[in-house]
Length: 198
Image 1 (spheres, rainbow, N blue to C red):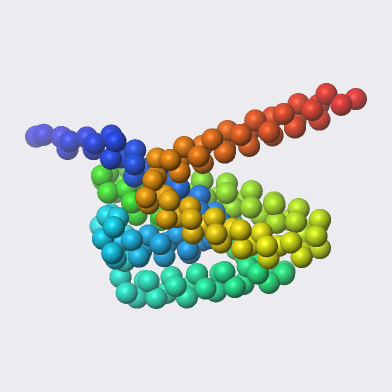
Image 2 (image 1 turned 180 degrees about the horizontal axis):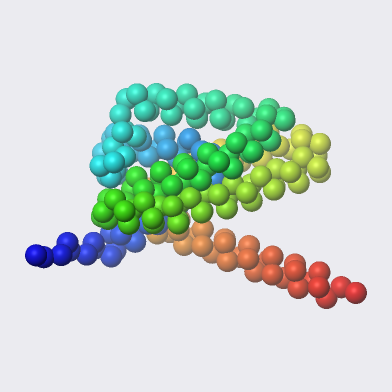
């Protein structure tokens, strides 16, 4: 009995990087990266794993398109944007997990599910929580007036990030990891400053 061959490590690294980039974008907009992946799959620009081929079907693309429009519009409305953030705490990690799993074509189902949960779900949840905190700060500082502008910037970031994750996944993953390291360094410096104050 021969064991299954190991996946090509470079191909797997590209797929994981693609999943990380898409999951990060799902932390900004839950449905937009799913629509981008579905369209890319439909146009055969990106292979989707067998279990997620449904993302490229006509009905799925229609539903995702409606969901994207609804999410983009609702996020511009004061108060509704905070309700979306609360709902996103549940929805966005699921979207991130789906996205990460959808592009992992070189692994069997169980390792795909575990890797997608550990990377996609965690990354999208982290990005979402950071975004939600920024929104709360914006609400406090601008009485909510600055939130629609932040929302538009998030829309642009989600579109560019989703496309870039498919086109240059390793670069996107490297930028994401660099931003994460930078954020951790800033948080550590802030804590050190807070502890050094009398």
